[in-house]
Length: 489
Ligand code: ZN
Image (cartoon, rainbow, N blue to C red; front, side, top):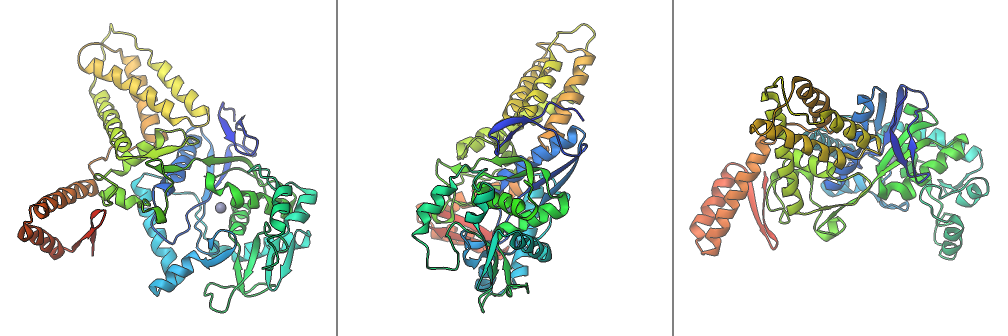
């Protein structure tokens, strides 16, 4: 199947013509969430980026098998194979089964993604459901001489691997340097070298998530799952592997090493990485107090948020940047995105009401369609698509206002070749901006503002009345040093 689609391949650092191994079938794997907390803005970007890729490939006629995993075991608190399992820790603190934690946050992740109109993947495998496949792969790596067993744990041997292959092909890290600079720090642990990573970890007696293996009762290392599940569902080499830039090292780098070590083959043709989202120029993080969940955005329920923003505003905001560019969140940026989104949706509705005339102005609508395909074919350049859709909006409004006319042919192209495919199928926007949730968020903000005003005037009677009335319908209002938040109880 021919196409002109160029994809920027992180591995080769250039745009390459997309040629799937087995067209019309495309295998795509994207690293999914570690399910121990609510999805935040940082989760929305890869989800929406690869949703755009998934949608566009399908639009081009490919049959895409899209695998996005759920990490429910093996992601330790400190990514360098140390610390408690993130899910087990949450389970311990809240006195729950680890799988209860994983299921709870998986459900919530799905809900948030559904609101963002992110299509569900074709297969959503869980790491804990693929322990056998991971053990199998570790066995192969040991048999091929690229891993060693130490006290029941198995580690990938970077030094040995580097004699045959190159560790660092994806991230561009210099393994020689890493081996030399870190060697002196060694000696405190089982690893022969601190750059080695765990393929299997022996479980401490108190560790609850454990499975039998040839080496110990334990659990797989974090990088093992994606290699094992990618291989199981997409084959030893598949087309596209995606994820956030923060996963490039060590996670994806190690996936490449594991596949080379196990099968002697590179696992992926096109590596794609989306850039990160910053908040007012700062990195997002729990410790920085700016890690807002998506549900916080939808409800306007965080001191940093001026008000609620609908899921479609968030989606539009993310699509307004090319996926490899940085994207900075601010209330102003979201307000601008909301305006743009509304203007586009209005135009889509208006277009359906336009009446064509026989003698009409020429608008060059087909050129806009071509420009949208060119933009998508240039590494999924969604902001250029949006700019062309705004150009269409201008034409629609001028016809509506009687400043211009349009012929039947151009109107048909406008509606059926431009707006419908690009706005709905490819960008995945929905015309549902006034969801109940946004309305509730707006109402709650109004109520909280009135209460704030009462408190400023020392009108405690009104302030308490509002709090008690809300409590009576199951809403708790909490006053913190940064402002007031609310939640359903
Ligand atoms: Zn992964």
